[in-house]
Length: 126
Image (cartoon, rainbow, N blue to C red; front, side):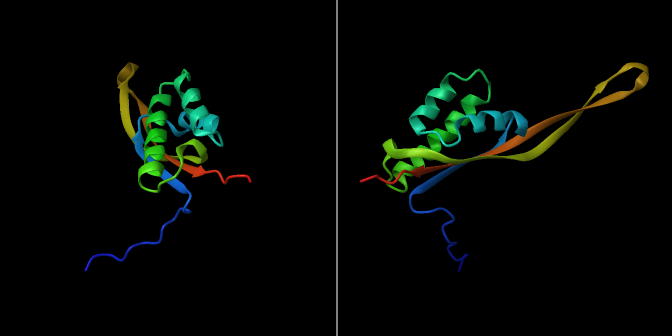
């Protein structure tokens, strides 16, 4: 039996990769995602390689996964790929506490994020 195959959500010239539970807040991750949105893939790799932000290394891994999906699963030309979407979402929030003076406690929130990167193949201009 099983489930019926679902309709493909992306176009034929697109591929996607998702990373869940990245250990950083969504606002910090969105700064890195915003810096590569709309870029060609080769240029985005260079941008991420020289970024000072710690999470840029994880974003680079997700981008490599999206490019590999495009090449191996959808037979797209990797030289013509660009990042069409880079969306960031909230994941869980670990709640911790720190002891303070006079028997009080202060709460600490450690947020996690989700990242979704969609790469698209540019149409050839004739």
